[in-house]
Length: 165
Image (cartoon, rainbow, N blue to C red; front, top):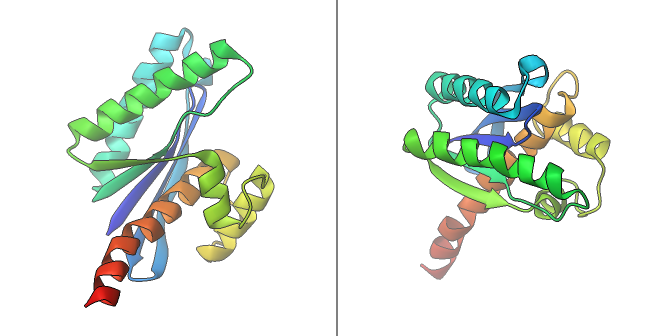
């Protein structure tokens, strides 16, 4: 199963693709869509949509996972993040790819073992789990962590069915 993980953002959107075979997860690709110099929010969202469409076409994931919204002290920042998530949800749906959402703390618990882990810890564990030569940029590391979390979580129903058989 090929899984695309997405860490949404209107300036830097991380993406990561992993391939899951049973309990093993293998790195396929990762990157960051940089929309910083694109001007107004609408132009940044267009760039995100275009580049994410290319990622979906290139890697043809079976499933995708995105970080869910979390409480923010800055309502304006939360609203902008919501716009980026909307673009991701729409693009993934248009590609016909099943989508799951995971809270940031749940991803950190699944990857690092604690919901309060910082970005550096997540990147280090992702690097080790995927046997990467170096830690990916933080946005891409978060996206890979989301993909790994989904790859592991999607196995759970299969394991339960096998245990009941």
